[in-house]
Image (cartoon, rainbow, N blue to C red; front, side, top):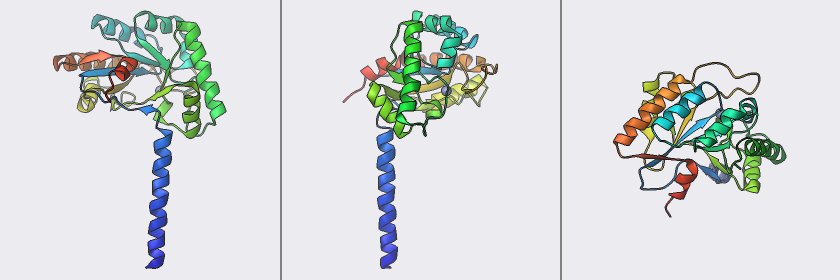
Length: 238
Ligand SMILES: [Zn+2]
């Protein structure tokens, strides 16, 4: 029994260490914001990506909603005017890496290079210096955590996802989001694709745009308003 006790003790210690390590890795990550205000941040990943980004911009303008776009560096290079248009229409732009690699295993130096490259690209293209980053696939490692800290950047995840890379029915995408949102929520949707190599596939993002209309209209009817991620962070309590 003594041996068993030691094994259980060692496992408990190991579990606590793993938990502490993972907590540290994600300590500069935001899932949602603590606030009583009925404010929500809509976020879009992997663009700019014609024609879906234009369709989304048109819809957001019609409904007077500002959102946050996590831009993929490769697409900013390919579609610079569209990236600039996102900013010209009052939306927030942020960094979603250049290549869209899963970044858990990269070293700090590799991460810094990837982050700085896209920050500079976005600055030159849109005039905005990004301070927010969304890790591709939501995967964060120690190297990324250290690189973000060094650059003073915040990692932004989400607490409500439309799973729109898999679900292609707009009503279903909207329902997945509506089931999870509350005051201070960050909503994850996509106007582009997460491919690492080659040109973006041409799968439609029309369902993500259509779902956005449903989400905005139904949440507005419940008294919610829509803000950028930075504005949402400004509403944080405590
Ligand atoms: Zn992505």
